[in-house]
Length: 205
Image (cartoon, rainbow, N blue to C red):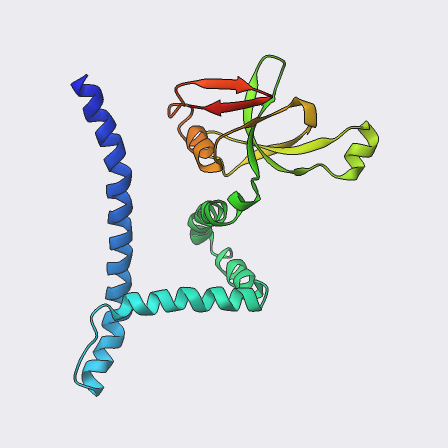
């Protein structure tokens, strides 16, 4: 029992500690690079320096890049991305980071609902996400209402595939997108303790 409590506490603390460590590390890095560079000239010209200047400038740069990206409809961002991808070693680092960031900040908003579908064969269910109602081209051919379902890979939900499923075969889950993603990332280890099925829905309790 004590071992289980200890492991549970450790598992809860490790992500928090790593997150704090990374954030503080990034702030210190920005302060050392930008802050020291600019404070050197401030000290020479004005006779004083500003603590934490690098962090402030880094935040401003992020907002400026965001504004430029929105105004230019991401043209500047796409140009920089194409430039970075030309370098063999750098692109191997950039692409995985880019995909992760895109998923965390943008793609999740396109996932409307966590669902279960009977796939890849009868009796086996896959956890997926409703992304949209299938287009009329699909529905007109089959003569029924269809949903587009994204089935993510585990443990990395950054990749996966899309299937088209009839409305009556989609089981909606009363859980949030983030909880479903945590279940996928953990490979099912972070598992709800119980399922309750009622009126075509599955809910966790």
